[in-house]
Length: 317
Image 1 (tube, rainbow, N blue to C red):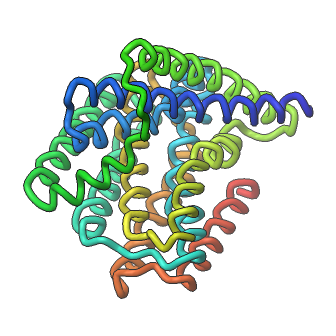
Image 2 (tube, rainbow, N blue to C red; image 1 turned 90 degrees about the vertical axis):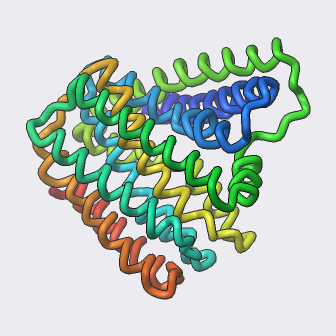
């Protein structure tokens, strides 16, 4: 039992470190090739930071644990908008950028509704995965076009901050970074998913519950740390956009790539309960964003209470 918990934690650490190495190496190579920080930030960094979730989801799907795959994405999206946003707002009220209202939230809601529609028959197929990736490409293309049209200097500065700082531009070493990253992602996902399955068997709970809680919380940890530290510094103006962007990538890229590699069976409970929670919390966030264009501490506490009720329902329903 103790070894299962140790392997779970070690797997998560190796997984996240692997993602970091992958982003560092690939970003440095992209800079050597004179790619724009704008493009690097919206593609390489975005995909690299989603790599741990992708490897977990693919590993779980290939090893016959589709509930962990779906639970990871749905649970992570709920965690981002309830727990992470709630904690961030309690530390320091979260400012809402106009783009979050005009672009990020509508796209998040549309992607969530589209996901609900395509899994309504209980299966996410290869062609539905293709559809998700096409939407992802359109979304990224729109972001690049919009950012290049207006406030490009501000956006490029933000994207430069997202790109890991490194004075090491040596090609060979950056390739090693990428290889280490891929190895970390592969072995980390093997250990993390394997121990998560063992945990479900040992405790006697569904893999769905482990996916929605343990796995989702683990993969949301980077967002939690980043948003929390930014809140302590009073830098919350990008928090909402980052969280909504993460949710969009979870649906379009994680489920898109995973279902292309291996179709995903969706359990009735996920379809009839869990995804409805995700839709509900996404809707509830909108009035909080609109009011004063600020998510204040009281609203942060409300979000944390909602997350508490959700977690209770996961174990009790």
